[in-house]
Image (cartoon, rainbow, N blue to C red):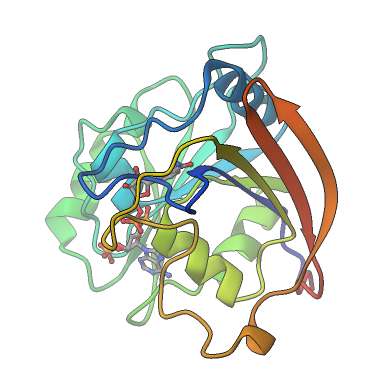
Length: 219
Ligand SMILES: NC(=O)c1ccc[n+]([C@@H]2O[C@H](COP(=O)([O-])OP(=O)(O)OC[C@H]3O[C@@H](n4cnc5c(N)ncnc54)[C@H](OP(=O)(O)O)[C@@H]3O)[C@@H](O)[C@H]2O)c1
């Protein structure tokens, strides 16, 4: 079944961190934030994991350029995000993907806050099924904005088509600092996801790298 085209976007330090060990994730320059908002205005939906909502409380709207707000999709298996999270404000539609095992009161709270809740069986949300459901709702282009765990889950499932990563001229170190892609990881380099570099651009003092994922499974 068809799914949307998925672009993973992130800002990372030269050492591959998307936040410091204490959780500071303000890595993007002003120029890169404007690029990100332009990218948001050109997709049908933006998707993040619950960890990103809890850490950064982003609104995921378009503010720095003129353009429409995308639909916001939060992958939140246990319905952990608070009902006053900015992503649930009225500036755009929000879909929260939740497991049937989540606390019913929390799920009801999300609905009352205005979110559309999609319920999934099992211990993990089947991300391919979620993307197929989003496609049925007319979402053709999806921007994946992290974090580390959801990036891994999406990449490992072969659901990412393109990667746009801004490399900031900083090194923050920290073994516990989140990297671009976390999760269990592949045991060998050979098993790693293969990419083809399609563009390199200088954005202010950052470098924007655009890759195509070779062998992503669209259908
Ligand atoms: N620099 C950047 O561009 C950038 C962008 C975004 C985020 N970040 C940073 O990344 C960090 C957050 O990353 P993170 O890895 O902690 O969190 P995350 O990837 O945003 O969210 C992970 C959580 O999402 C839920 N989830 C993901 N896949 C699921 C599935 N298939 N089924 C059910 N639930 C699923 C799980 O919630 P449950 O555990 O509740 O089940 C999981 O713990 C923050 O520090 C943030 O600042 C940086």
